[in-house]
Image (cartoon, rainbow, N blue to C red; front, side, top):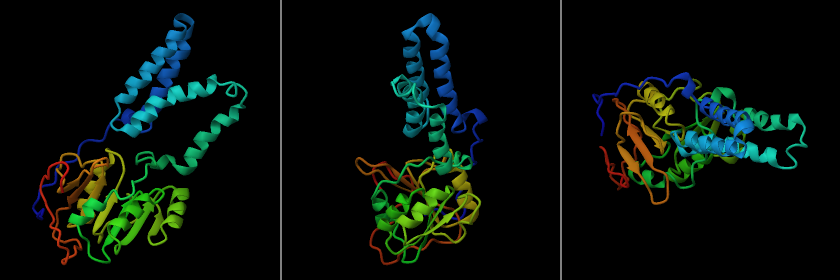
Length: 281
């Protein structure tokens, strides 16, 4: 187990403004469209091929596959829609519908957190065998989206006291309807509600969010557990990890501090700590 004297690795500096999502996607799409429109008089069809190549290169430079798809796919998708016979017949306001819907579901204030990518069913089952929580343990899904993470948490820890927080009002409403055995709050996962007294906080966010989550966990929930799907805390080795075949890696960190999280003392499965090898808990 981590002790109260375990050092906390200093947090890395915030990325420059031009690397903050979704600016990389907007800049990549603009560059590709500029290359295509500006290069067609001199290059003809080669301008389109160069723009596609640029979109691919810029997409591959992103830090995760969801971002790579967003960046690389924006230009070819929009160009393909314009190339259809219907694209030239659509009124201009039709192109405003997708961003309007995106802003309604995914407000600007939430852009620094993760887009809507659901937690796969059963993704946390392996972790629960080695991190047994006692009945009534207080568990939070920070950024619960449509509630897939809450469902995975309920499957892993059936007797836990589940809460979820989601900034998007439509998503919070749907999560509340889909997960009626959990308390879902609409609000800012960073500011609305303290993590004090929680036994476990689960996140499926972005790589850039993990340093901030670790800082908040160290400040507000000493002795508890921080669990992340796929993304690691910078500069800190996980205490528990699971990489099931064909699934996403699950990482867990014991937060330094005197308070102990509510573990089930009757559970036979041991809790392994330290830098466990990939593929094992």
